[in-house]
Image 1 (cartoon, chains in turn blue, brown):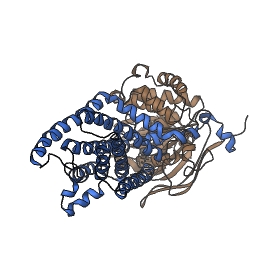
Image 2: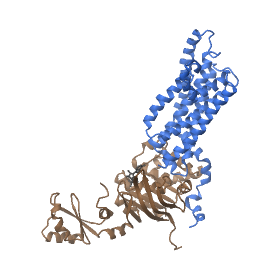
Image 3: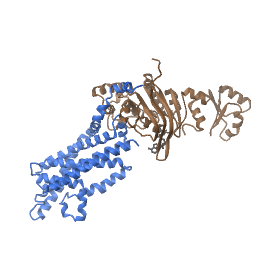
Length: 280
Length: 311
Ligand SMILES: Nc1ncnc2c1ncn2[C@@H]1O[C@H](COP(=O)(O)OP(=O)(O)O)[C@@H](O)[C@H]1O
Ligand SMILES: [Mg+2]
């Protein structure tokens, strides 16, 4: 039988492989978003509750303490809430992005093995990775948007170009998510990985990235933790856009460059790990 | 019209190693269009490994394989477009409903939404799941999940339907419903690839079988051909009590073509079981129990490997 005849048989009358090659990742993403939409109410509730609690407890609470004890009632030249808001925005982006890639990846490879079901169709490992990533970015964007609205409502931004902080937060979130998705696919032991990520990656990120006070007020031997942290780079950019925190042109380029490198490397690494794990 | 059916799958010297362990050891087989082809073998024989290589989701270590004339390592997506795969372990989307599972899977094949919606109705009927259409998968019974997994594999009207142990873990009634559905597909001319360690399943569903053990092919033929070649028409099963079975074995051996001494009983192979029982009793041997039955694939496997299929 010639290839021509085979092409025209049975399933290939209706299955359009070229279309799948082109849009496969979008099919994967939309399936993931469909699953997420089952928890729409709690997703929305969490998106609002999270920034409200943070801003009230830390922003307003610690803010009044800081204002009372600093000489001119400011930090980095602005009220504490204004200083904190872009950092919280970047943090929620990174945290949401992280959980939105790790959970479906663990589910797909280990718990429900639905990645193997997808891979039994013409969908490739690379498309599964990209689709999972795109769904995570979409879902995270929603949280970040809500967060931004709450920050504005609190009067914690004071520049017309503040909205660009949404993009920088999403940028860092995507870069970190891409990398962590690859690491999750690569890791054999999922429970250990989750504990490790929580204790040794997320916590230090949270604490050593200049979130609550400027990184420069840390001893220099701890500052390197900030330099490798996508959160710090994102916070610097966020502060630049929300209240005009000073950054030189070189600094701007370095922050963007670092995140871009992480994004590109993270995606390529994920594609590779997904392909490898699916064909084992 | 009468030209032989085209070969859809052809494997030569197919080998898969996991590290140093050889799971599939240089096997050759070919499957023609419209075949209902079975892999019969105990756990660990290498059936699932072989299925995953055919499904273009697992890379082989050596040897060659062509599916629909293509190499799976070079044309995975193009090959998978023709296949419907039912894995050994159900991997449905637990959080989605029955229809959503079918819908999402259809989209992975790039099928038009309208086509999928119509196809879902047909498949719900086929799988007898109409009443469960909006139920989440996690609430389905094992048999229903299995039928849904098969329905899902059929959404793209595949050339080849691959089923890895389709009825393992199901109760007898659920198995029979499933067999009925698979039989219908066979009648429609769908090429079926089935692995099983149940000899009755292999006998029911497969036109051609390979018997696998420890990664190698022990024999290949139709179920009846295998029985003809490797066994006799009938089997007489006798029990003398576990301590005596071995003692009388020598005497029994002289009476029939071949015997197998199992821990709890002795199998005597011959063309006429009743006659065998009669002569045995005449020679003064009185078993505690006796049973005459037709030879089955279980006997074939026992003959080929000295072991039984299900440990
Ligand atoms: N991913 C794997 N890594 C290592 N060994 C494996 C892997 N998958 C299967 N095996 C081993 O290969 C052999 C054949 O497995 P499998 O193909 O699943 O057999 P079957 O489906 O006939 O039960 C078994 O001994 C099994 O333990
Ligand atoms: Mg198996």
